[in-house]
Image 1 (cartoon, rainbow, N blue to C red):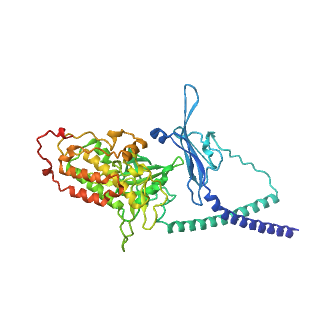
Image 2: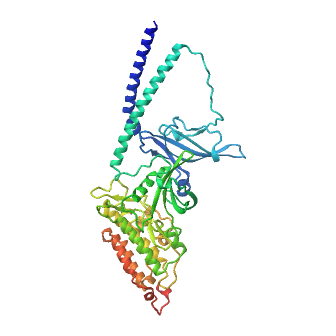
Image 3: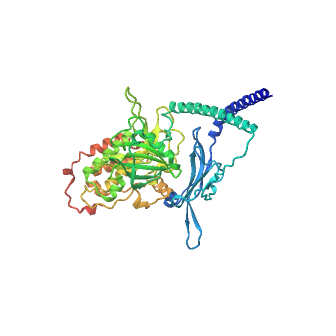
Length: 525
């Protein structure tokens, strides 16, 4: 009898192992289907609401993730006790998509933390729009009761069978997952030049930063995609641009641009590295670059006027940076091809000044790469800052070719040259306060309709002062800016032509500029 029982147990074990193997293969086959499912969550950001007035909760389709990850929805909210009413005031801070490996497996968004840090609650969940509502159910301790019951020999045998099943299932599933991950990784490496870089799971994705902790000091600027901080990465000061979770694509686009072959250039902002940070279960993405304490050209012109020599230095280095960005440099034996790049948000805020007033171009979150022989892809034409949009962008009549996008940058470059000339003291007359292009005519916040009506229909351009025409250098610079913002895109100068023109303007020496006049300079305005 004992022998028959042992043989029965062995047959049961063999049957269970076979079932485990079959289950493992089924899991592997169906795994790719599960991974590819795209989750939908509610999207909200209180910072965008406060800064831009866009307070609506919208729909967000979460990005596809790797095989070993899963998308979830999340909510971050703050609750403060109202001492008058005795009720909790709840304010939702953020909603969106969240990637987590093991947690967040509940269908409702519930925070069980007993004492939320800084009155900030966080919850995550799985399932479409499961973050529509959130709950706080504080638990001081988790149940840890484990009662021991007497067990017979047959119950011990059952446990043994279940453990064998579980081990076999986990081993096979793990091997299948590793194989899938390896194949997926090889596919991504084969298309490295075609898709944005995917960050690794470690905190620092740049090895050179791992041993150099970064301390944030102060916010220097806020932009469309995030805040720029002055930070300390001993022994250097650096600039850190922090992208929230919802702007991860812009972070990937910027680092993709910086990592292109031959992108290191004196007039392109110098890239140091990238990092991914996770705090309170929320991800943020850091872009680390060299820090320039003079800030943007826009901020500098608000505070200072420029001499003729300073104007030439800024304008020439800015044009040289734009020319390098636009230029396609063929591959050589030692270097890969550098493709042409369109900035698509060129403006004085995105031109930074070094200590010696040399300019460098920054902010490539909207940039387009033009690989030879490939179309520019599925892209939206009407992007950028309204007041710097070319006529063809405003009216939605862009020819989706490389040259068309490069001419849009040149139009914006003409407006930035106007900003520079408007704050130059070389003509000897009074220099007005700094204004943005079209600010005098259309105010601080022109609508898209106002820009279309004036720039497209009326062909309005910023006013060129008569005083500038009394100075040979400023007059030549005015001619250049007019050829940059020509209404006919094909008649505009190329960025290389702008650089050559501006470099020629430097021949007007300071001694030639102080031209005697029998009239009061104010009469020439």
